[in-house]
Length: 213
Image (cartoon, rainbow, N blue to C red; front, side, top):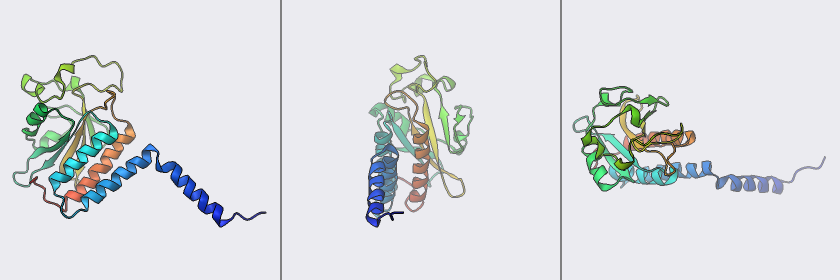
C-alpha cells in the first residue's frame, strides 16, 4: 500500500481550513474573536465595549436594531446603555427607562415573555400591548398591529432578550434585539451566538467599570 506523503496531508488540512474559513459559522467565530480582543484592550471602558458590541451584532446578524442594558452599581437598577439601529426619538425614550430585577421575570405586571432557553426569552407584540406613551419608544410605530402571517415572521414590536449572567447566574444586564431586516426572527444559531456574546460581555465587564462613563 502506497504511503500518503506528508505534503499531501498538509495540503489537505490547509485546503479544508480555507474552505470553511469563509462560511457563515466561521464568520461568527471571527465575531467572537474580535469582541474578545476588544474586551482585552486596557483602555476600553464598559460604555465603549457595549456600543461596539451593539454595532457589530446588528451588522453581522442583519438585525433591525440592538440595545444593550446594564446593571448600575450606583443604585442597583437596570438601564439601556447602547444601541444600534434605533431612530433617535425612540432611543431617547428607551434610554430613560429604568428596570428592577423583578422586571426580568418571564411574567410580570408589565411584560409577558416566552422562554426560548434559560438565558433567552421572546416578547411578542400581541402579548405585550403598549400604552400611548410607550408607543413612542417603538422604532417604527406606524408598522405596529399588522397581521402576523407566518410563525417565523417578526412584527415591529416583537423583540428578544438574551440575559448577561454573572458567574453565580446574577443578572448583570441584557442584550435586546429585534427581528432581521427581512422581517423574520433571527435563526436559532444566531440566538445561540448572541448567548455566547452575552457570556463574553459578562466576563469582560467583570474586569471593567460597570457604570458607563
